[in-house]
Image (tube, rainbow, N blue to C red; front, top):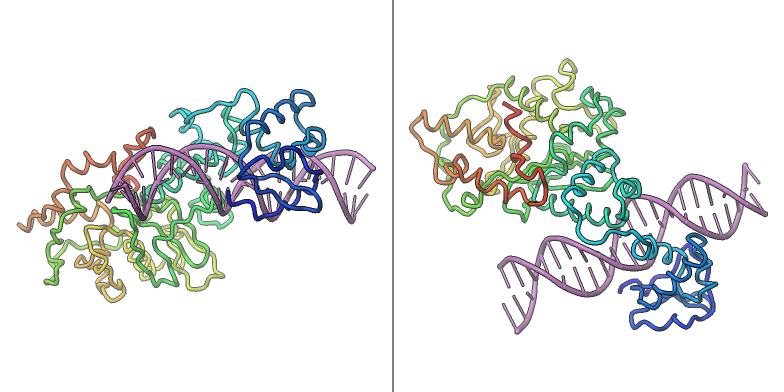
Amino acid sequence: MGHSTTTESDDGVLSADSPLSNDGENSGGSSNGNALLKKGPWTTAEDSILVDYVKRHGEGNWNAVQKHSGLSRCGKSCRLRWANHLRPNLKKGAFTSEEERLIIELHAKMGNKWARMAAHLPGRTDNEIKNYWNTRIKRRQRAGLPLYPPDLCLHALPENQHHGSPGIYEGCHDIMQINGYETPDFMFDNFNISPYTSEFPGISATVSTSNGFAPQFCTFGPQIPKCAQETDAPMPDYEGGAPIEAPPFHKNQIESYASKMSQSFGLYFPYEPDPTKKMFPFGVDKDSHFMNDNILFNHVCSAVRRVKSEVFDQSWIIDSESKRNPNNYLDYSTPEASLGSYWVEQNASYWKQQGCPPTDAIGALMGEDTKNTSASIWGLSSCCWNNMPAVCQMSDIH
DNA sequence: AATGTATACAACCGCCGGCAG
DNA sequence: GCTGCCGGCGGTTGTATACAT
C-alpha cells in the first residue's frame, strides 16, 4: 500500500507497541514518538479484536479501542473499519438496479452527500455509494454521456434557473460542480476554442471555461455508430472541394434550437470576455445588449463548434469566425455547423433533394444502425435509462 | 504471453462541526 | 469566547483484479 510514508494528521492518540503492530507484511505504520500505528489493510485478527471490542463496549469512543484492546490502529481507522465492513446488517455485493436508480435520483437531489444518501440505502455505506458514483462518473465521462437522464436533470434544476440569476443558477451548478466532475473536452479562453481530441470514439461535446463555467449538463452523448466511425468515407464535399450549397440556417432557428438546448441541459454559453461580469444563460433575456444578434450568433457558432464527431477529422475544426457567413447563415462547408443529429438530418434530406445522396457514413448515421447500436454506445446495461437517445434528445430541439 | 486499461474496492487524509471543559 | 478532542464527511489515492489488445 502506498500509505506507509504518511503520518497521522489529526489522530494524535498513540499507544505503546502492540502485539499486532508489526504483524502485517504491508503494515507500514507511522512513527510518532515511541508508538506505531498500523496502516493499510486490516487483518482478520485485527477485525476480530475490533468486533470483540465493540461487542463489549459498544460503538463510539474509537480512540479508546487502541487503549483498551491493544489494537494498533487509530480511532478513525477503527471507526471506518467498523462502519464499512464489520458492523452487522451490511449488505454486500453489487448494487441492484433498483439501488442504482435510487442513487442516481438521490444524487440529483443531494449532490455528493454520501452519508445522507446511505441513509436511504439500508445496508449500504457512504463509501460504497461514493465509489460507485465515482466509477460511474468516470465511465460516463469517458463515454461523453450525460450524468443524469434528461428528465431527472430537469427535475433536479431549480424551477427558476432559466431566468439567469447567478444565484438561482447555483442550485443546478452545485449539483454538478460539487463532485468536481469537469469534462474539459474543450477549453474556452475568451472564445478561443481548443479542440480536444477525446480518446473515445464518438461525439463528446463538453465544454469548460477558464472562468469557472462548469457545464456538465452539456455533455453530449455519442451518436456515431461504430460502422460510421470506422468508415473511411469522407464527408461529401468535405475533401477540399467546393462546399455544396446548403439550406440556410436562419438566425431565429438557431436561437430557437439553442434556447431549447439551454433549457434541456442548463446549457450556458459562456462567452463573456470580462470574467467579472455575470454570465447570462443562453437564449434568455433576449432584450439584453448581451444577447444582441451578433453575439447571439457568436454563441451559436461557439456552441456548434463544440459538437465534434469522429466522422469529421479534427482538421475540419477551423476558426468559425473566418467561416461566418455575413448573411447570418452558418457555413455548412465546415463541420462546426453541425448541430448534432439535427444537422445530419437536415443535410440528408437536403442532399436527397439535390440528388446528392449521403455517403455510407451518413447513410449509416441516418439508418437503422443508429438505433441498433445506440444502446451499446450508451453504455450501462444495468441502467434503466440507457436507451435514452443521444444528444440531449435532439427531438426536443425540433 | 505480455502489456495496457478499466473497474472495484479499501483505506487514508484533511477539513469541519459538535461538545465539553 | 476559546481550546482541544472526537467523530463524521467528502475527496483522493493505492492496490488488486478483470478484461482488452
